[in-house]
Each structure stands twice: as structure tokens, then as C-alpha cells.
Image (cartoon, rainbow, N blue to C red; front, side, top):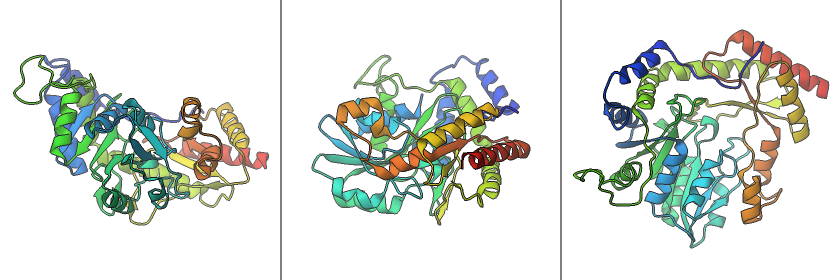
Length: 374
């Protein structure tokens, strides 16, 4: 049996929608773009949405829209996909890392205030693996210190914190639609916000800095980028969004089956879900118990691959990536919780249509390999 780590869920609905675009004169900057933005904004519960060609681009636009620049600092997490820190470097600012909560794997609000300085301009928190960050505490800190609050919800479309959807917290947020996300546009992302000024700036910068209303053809009023999302991608996104409830239920079903089969296995820890939140399952990441090393983890992943099961490691600590070490002098031990978790994570195959027999095969092999390792 061959089981990949991830696989998109594309139906005839999506195929038909994409092919329909090819019958129109619009392959970019057309009606599907506006429709997709409008529907995402409504789903998340915000006033404005600006489509981009990636979640990374969306983060960059937000950093720039807030005027964050060289000499400024942004507080963020070292346990994330690297773009949540790189977007800060794009504008010459410095990411200031805060260690994570060992249960939720999100940034630990209790450790933030001690790292706030006169240079701090924003907090950028990530809803890691689809689990909402602690937005009440983060909002209190941001208000107290008059900081921008940015939500990286790239992994959490459909997740909820105290009844409110992720993507609607802070001053502005981003979503991502990479193929392993809850919905996909191939490549793609979205800025989502209730702030009209930020929305207008992002709308201009995503399209080479053009004037958003009343501008002449090829009139550019600020530095911008080619971060647009094309019509084919938007059509795919619209169709996927129509199925969002079905998709979220499918992913929850797969996670539940894993939980049932691994919950009593003492050698691993299944994903934690806090009270008062609704998880939107992006990946299914277990942690080996603390007696296991990173070397043990890597052996397990290699053995799983030999059985035809693709697994992954989520995430490598950002501060220990080679160019972050070189640029900032980070070393092992700087963020011990992040590092300890990272050394023991295993992402198991996870996608909408993963079958029960495939899950059973994954779990049987995982248990067997770990038992032999003991």
C-alpha cells in the first residue's frame, strides 16, 4: 500500500469551474477574483478580502501596509512555516521569537511582555496546525502596548475561537490555499480585514501599486508587486469553498479515527484541542513521548516510508534554520519547548478521502515500528 502525506480533494465541480474560465476573455483580474474575495470575506466574517498568489505574499503586504520597516521588531513564534518570520525580514525588520505553549503549540502569551521594547511594532501570531491561538490574551497585550496584531491563519480556515472564525482576529489576518490546506487554489492566499485603509493599501500593492479607484491605465501611485491571483485559481477556490462544510467534516472524520486508534497508545501524544475552540484540521501531527530522541523520530519516519507510508516533520524551528543562525546568532536551547516538540513530531498521512483501511495500515505500522524501537 502506498499512502502519500497529503492529497487535494478535486471533484468534477472544480474541474468544470476551471474549464469555464477558459471560455471567457478573463484569465486575470476578472469576475472570479471579485467573487472569490467577496465569498471568503463573508465566510470569515470580515468586511474586506484581497486575494494574493500565496499566503506568504499576503503576509508581506500586511507588514508593508502597517509601515513596519528596518529597525522595527515584530514578536512572533519560532514554531511555524518559515514565511511567518521571513515576511518580517522582507522589510528589514527583526522577528523576535517567543517560545510556545507545550499543549497548543501556539505562541505563549505569558512570555510576550518581557520581550516588548520601544522597537516593537506588532505581534504576529499563528493558528498552528488549525488550532486557534489565545486571541483574548494576545488582544489584551496588543491593546495595552499599542501594537498591531496580525493573525496568520494560513492553516486554520474554518477554525473557531469562542464562536468566532479564525481570520477575523487582530487588526488583519491572512489565509493560504496551498494544495494541502483545507481548500486549495493550487497556489494562493488572502488578506482578510475590517480595516478599510489596510485593505485599500493591500489592494493597490497586490497589483503593482496601481490606484484602486479612478486611476488611469498603468498609473502607479506606490511601490507594489505582482502578487495577483489569477481567474483559474479563483474559480477553483470558489468551487472548493462551496464544499467547505463537507471538507471540514471529512477532515474531522479522519482526525477522529486517528484519535480513536492512537489515544491509548502511551508512546505517542495525539493533538491537543483546547476547550472553547473548534479545530480545523490542517495536518495530523503526533508527538513521540519525551523518552524518544530526534534520531529515533527520524528512524521511525524512514521505516514508515519503507512500508509505503509518507510521513513528515512539522516544524523545524525557524531560529535554527541555517541563515537565521548566521544572521541572528541563534543556537540550540534558545527556545527549549519549541525545540523539544520539533524533535519528536511526526505528521501522519492526512487528507479528506483517506480511507479507514489506510488509517488502520498507518497505525498498525506505526505501532509496530515504535514497539520494535523500544
